[in-house]
Length: 498
Image 1 (cartoon, rainbow, N blue to C red):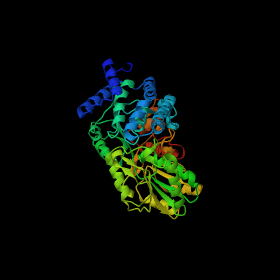
Image 2: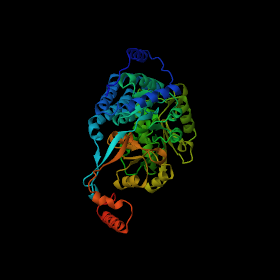
Image 3: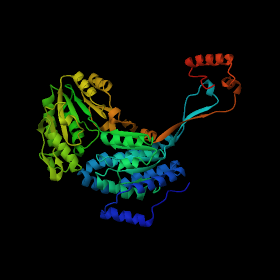
Image 4: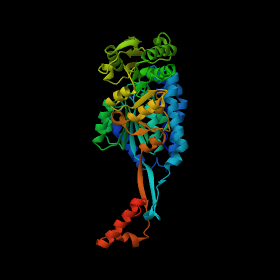
């Protein structure tokens, strides 16, 4: 197998010059996308991605890219989202590096065939599952976490042996352009490509899998486009993640963890708590504690804080502002400055289920607080809505936590903290129902981008037994097969494949 191609010197220096000077990248047009897909498919069919050594080398290159260009990524995320360096490194770059290093350390084990239990009829045979790459996959990132949502799925695609085309969100143009420039310098130029194009048109080109992270309306359109070519999809979709705060909890710690989760990245997150269902006896204390946390986190004027971000564009800003002004009562925050795309960290009280902010997804720093009288009321409220990506519960009562976990349905669940369950490489993360389908992280990313092929390796011995299945069909043979089937019901399917 040939070694990975390096970019030509001209292409390398052009990309480097653009990265340094900040020149804009050109939009990728449909014909170009089709050409890139064709190149990737030819390369995949040549078997370049199959060897473990190739996959490890590409994963190591991802880590090297993030380490060598950390400042460039921080700068791009700062320009797109006003994201603080701390958040850029911790919630984006470190997550991708952890995924890549975890895959490198476990890849050999993941690639090995998995043997299944034998029975009497397969005693001399070999039954196993082989993980084989799907082919050329399409990864669509979102603007909320533009590095993490592009590169974490890419790690899984590489580990599984696929070629990939990545489409970063056009809303975060600086980050998209940085990925467009850097990936050709580090990854195989025939296997991995970054495009800056409309995603729905590209999906129709027929990939072997589409991995999409974003909002429900766009995810629906992506799934419909993929369905026309019978392309399987993984959808990680936003929704309204509920957070129940019980009367029995540590209010100070609860407020800190909720405030951090809701207002980091200026509230632009798929996995943050979207609204609080607070036990009526502790609502006032919780709102006051949240107010104290916001002052502690961002000072008296969050606009002046270097730890607080901005909305990604005016469209998202205006939508969030309109919902904010038409819902509930502002208890904390509420200030907006259009010229800066700034919305202060805001807590709303006296919110009702019919308010606009409870009817649409919130991608901004607004936290509605609704009151409930008990956990039964909270569970009933959650179950009336579409299944969310995450459910959060804060309580020192283990029975309350167990009820929320077992009596509601969601993509993931976390008690007494927020967001962390969506970041762990050892846990699968994904949606259910309206919040998506499929999952990723660690081994689950590898499985998402693999086909688990069932393999039965038989010999030609024992034909004296298997002859019973052949015509002409005799009652005597049927009696023996029926008897064997009866045995199999008690003893692990002994004779099902005679």
